[in-house]
Image 1 (cartoon, rainbow, N blue to C red):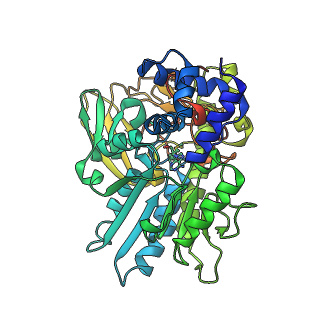
Image 2 (cartoon, rainbow, N blue to C red):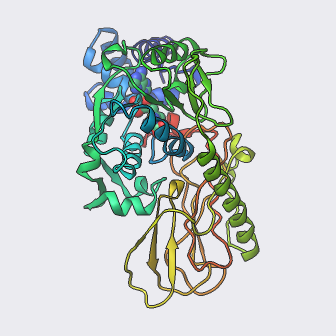
Image 3 (cartoon, helix red, strand yellow):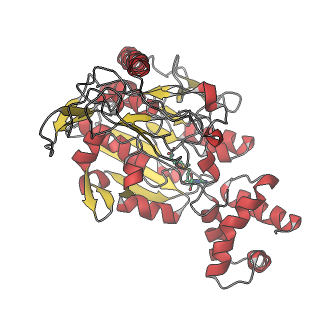
Length: 453
Ligand SMILES: C[S@@+](CC[C@H](N)C(=O)[O-])C[C@H]1O[C@@H](n2cnc3c(N)ncnc32)[C@H](O)[C@@H]1O
């Protein structure tokens, strides 16, 4: 058990090096993250480790800070920031930057790379309009280790199942043993750099778009204000900032203002900030909402089998605040057809963000519903993700498989995210309802695989 003054020392050290704030109730977390380091270094216990830290072992300090970061991320996290990018930011930038054909995007806490790669995949959709442009996507993070993973672009099956439309998996990823690697083309579009948000940003240059998502939550108020002020200083008047679902500028910084009727996206609070056209975005959002409602209603009518939510998943503000619903069969996007082994029946697996892609593949059944794959979406919030599966069987109900909770999603403040769904194409029962848990509470903020919960 760590002594109070040791906790005090280490938490201060971590805050001064990274901005990460550890409250006293996170003693268990500190211990569980530091013990493996002590063991690896052949130290007897945490007292010895802290002794070495007090002695000023710089490598050890770095290792400890790295161990205390939470690197949770996933593709197209929270959907909205990527729809907003596709339908608002990019159209604006394509016009506004036409004279110089240069766009710079900064993912300020890039973690394992899913965020910058999601942007790179969106940009790839616009490649004909962006021909001849120079697009810089810079992903930075304090953690060297996580940046190595980002550079490798290798993801587990679980990671590619979180938020990545299957059409994009097929298009941009290759199976490498039991992992998936994002194509070298997409990888080459992102530059990674180890960078601490407490450092001077100026050497990074100017950025038109900044994603600083799900990192400010770990900082105290003065650090948040300071980081936001310094980000604003790097941005032109028409720049856009994206924050995580549980992050805001309100009450923290007057350098930015929220974009009307939207969450998570901010403009500079300057006279030069342009009015942007939200029509296309709002249409997509309304379509997703309507589809979700229809999917949910259809699902109920079809009697979709869903196991009751385990108790531990019912906690958190997200219980009522947010859900992600996927409507049956998306209406937009390009369909990828993959041959299958089935002899009859087709099932469209459509799960795209912003309806960018879908996969239609023959299945082994002719069912109208198919088996429902239900997963509580990696989030520790609440709700469930009912994802219709790919092995549709005859019948209107199908089976439901619920995957245990993952490690948590972003800390959305009760937002509702709706995505086109994964349901079978011939789904007359409309059972696709994919209800994702709210992103309100992010257990993963404090979660590394070996943490004792
Ligand atoms: C939860 S991840 C967010 C990843 C991604 N932005 C997203 O929303 O999915 C937070 C990341 O912030 C990084 N981080 C924490 N403190 C930092 C600091 N002072 N400077 C730069 N990165 C930091 C962590 O290493 C971690 O990878």
